Image (tube, rainbow, N blue to C red):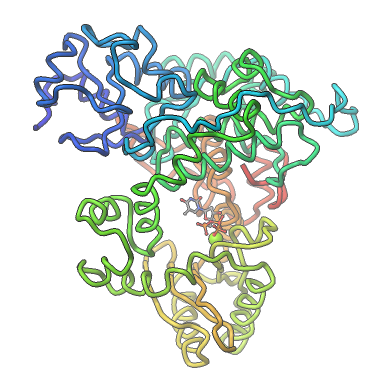
Length: 543
Ligand code: TTP
Ligand code: MG
């Protein structure tokens, strides 16, 4: 079933959907979650074309207005709303969807193998509201920026199209010059309105990441976060994004207990489905969709395989499609690269979170070894460790030296790796990526002692001049990074792990025609300053 991409509008829609994280497939399978038909196609023609007698439950069939509205409203609007229906589509009561009355409906990762009816134990008694919080926080708790953010969050719906659009990168960023509409907007902005639009960005918010037990919505946030993690692990960027926005909104509105549909739907970034889910959580103290997801064997297997080092989602899906159900199956039957083989052997080691204290010990071993190679080379533990996490997924270490370029640091890295293998700290190398702008080395390390687990460790070589931009990038988290880059882009600048630039000239398709002029790369705080963002210490960069 080769798609006809001759129609320009269809081609454009496909590209746009991919830009926003959709995976477009040209053969029908159980990984499909949405079928988007051209506007002149009827429901029975779709069935005929797909050679089906009915559309399997859990798959939404829509007209092209649906993806457009998802982008316009910055969330997944309900594909069952009548204006998205394809002509001839059976009405809800005609559809045999046993889940339709339950407040859940989204399939995860395209699987529709959900239990066929909601558990009989579903309770509908609303959970009693937690201890009431004072309606307004004291002024001393907020600064002017927080107030602007709060005002913006409660009065202005987040319209993703305002800051996403014809994208320039995988992060779907765009700059003010990317569309006439946006150009006009930017040029007519007063400083106040500039502040307003800036406050939509995650990087303008103070985030501690820790769940505030005082927040009356903390249970709702906790369950939504679990659900988001599942979507995230399945690389479902759309749903992950809308959950993230909703969670961020709930974290900000920490004085009101959100318990009704009306309250939930009035929150910025919360649409019909999420509002229903919030009500379900408040009413039943749990989310059925989350429980199904945890039970669904196919989701579990996909997650298991996707967790292997070196196995991406496409490969993981292939393993599932080949009928493998265990790591042992893959090990015995699949053709694997050496890193993937190690990824399986050390699966449980690599999956364990690493206690902060242990990350520090690994970091200390590296810095001690470095001193014997070149006293002036420094190592810094980055990622979640720098953000103050109590445990980390891996150990990210930057190697840098004042005045040194990549070539000099490459040599240091080579010697370091050799030394650390010799002293049996490094257990294996998994990948190495050498670029002109730096080198990444992936491997595993282990502390001395019986039965100590292997830990994933990454070395990143960063020239001394670029350390500020690298600190910013490798501290993360990734959403914070995207927000910062997006903000830079809105201001006509460009931010990457090497620096902040201005005057980047872009071509017709947003391709970069020059590198631009470097504004700052060495000093992390100056980058915040130039962007007009209040400096956020690493522990406040969790979105
Ligand atoms: P990671 O080690 O993947 O993430 P982390 O250290 O924040 O979390 P974990 O404890 O699970 O290891 O990446 C390190 C930083 O690199 C991350 O904080 C931000 C940046 N980064 C991105 O900006 N985008 C990405 O896609 C990745 C993988 C990393
Ligand atoms: Mg990390």
